[in-house]
Image (cartoon, rainbow, N blue to C red; front, side, top):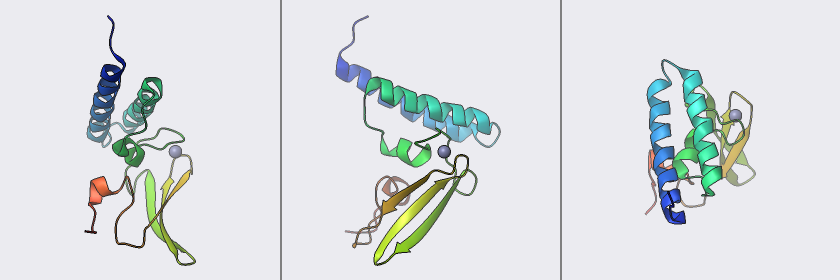
Length: 121
Ligand SMILES: [Zn+2]
């Protein structure tokens, strides 16, 4: 069946959201399955050629596709580099570190605002 490009992208986004919800649900009992869902979500994103949604960026390791759970499979630290502050997120499964610079205003960088909310105006 022929589908238009934007329909495929919409479908991809919906699938990714669903996979991440499932991953969250199964993680406590079946962490390996959650990691598999993470990988699949990333693969869908690539195939549909859509940018990674914020939820995916925050919940799945870009490098190995692991499902990221604070204190379990990821470590979050606020660090200082000179006057710059940034959030360092480490995937505990592959050791990949992602850094999100904090702006001068007290606003959380993407994708963290979806979990913790913007504290700025
Ligand atoms: Zn990783």
